Length: 315
Image (tube, rainbow, N blue to C red):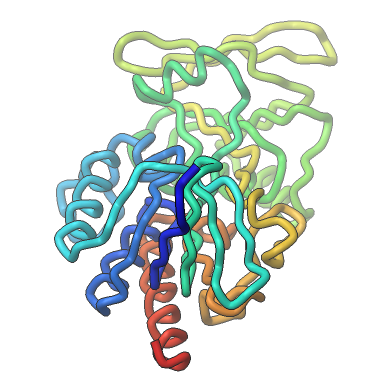
């Protein structure tokens, strides 16, 4: 156990684009921020390859490299960046208590929650394999461009899956939409849009048995029809999973107001939560956009809100 709690003016939990941007702004405002990077340093972007839609990188940039650049910029302004995982919080008093790895206790005047969200996966070994080799993605908006003119598949039945299927249909030759049940969960308007898009083929009562590929990436998938009991192999180059995201917010339950999915609620137009001095940024509170650039923007908001809160308190 640590002997006595460390006291900080601004604690940032999480290290994706939101966390690092918050750190850059907070450090420049002389808040001397401390950041704990969490279980996935750099966030979701470290699991992506090419990022082509972030402004300022005309030739694209690899996700992990981009997060190293974010980190270097935060360190340049003297952010205290540490390895560790927030495991418990106590937001009952004016000083916000956070425990790291169940042993280090931090007392912070302000806390910026930037813990992000994690994509839900099917849990197939082949799916994970081609996440690293290439061809499997949980973000059609991020990666659809790479499959222009090719055949792809998307798994999911909700509004997000339907929206991403129609987005892919504009870029790709053909889109197979793999739906587990005999109907979609998406709103009627989104269902109509999918069913009226000629190059989307919806495979109802279907589950993915295996993602197929080689050293260069995905080449197909084996789809099992639960009604007929038959397997079918489809030839595809991209395999998208759109079965939802889970915000990494479990440790804040009971303290911060959340929606039914666990996304932290903020006062509209701000990063403020229901607890004074605690701010939420990035994918931990954004289930709509979920882009690196919007996460970075909200990180800036979090740092500015924290700075103004501290100034009003006379810190």
